[in-house]
Image (cartoon, rainbow, N blue to C red; front, side):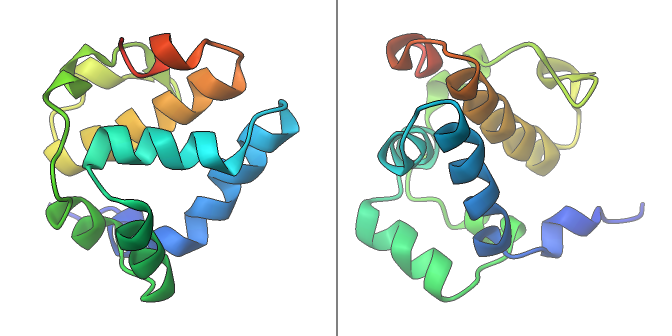
Length: 116
């Protein structure tokens, strides 16, 4: 099986795009960070270390302190694919994060984004 290119991309190279997407719609970097913390368990300091060290996506998720069990509640379409139907676990985690950021940018209340 061919590995997806995104697995080896640094999380730091994509993170600014998440922030820009949120900010364009009136949201903040703090909200993006809150989503990342909810999903992965990374603290602010841990997230900064990941960004500084340019950790790749595969390592980012493999070393996540505490993946949220409620992430299975994240459903819907992102990039034309249903999140809940993605079989590759790492790709599902990446698309789950994409979906959460997309929901924030579309104006969904943070409580709903974080499945509260």
